[in-house]
Image 1: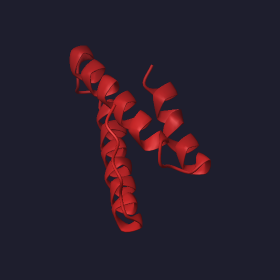
Image 2 (image 1 turned 90 degrees about the vertical axis):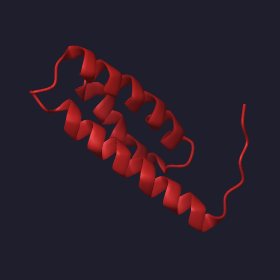
Image 3 (image 1 turned 45 degrees about the vertical axis):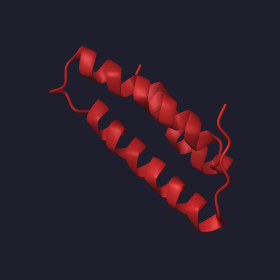
Length: 73
């Protein structure tokens, strides 16, 4: 396990980066032009980034991205 200490500003930046990355992945997952293996790889990566985001996000924001996990199945 790796522990890191961030300032408040760094936490906000990390929050922003993770949200934007998840938004992009959700957009990619909804693209009908992508085939199964590509979507599966994106889905696995989404789950990892979602777990990272879950450690710093408020519950209201977290629920917004948790629905993305259900949509991609």
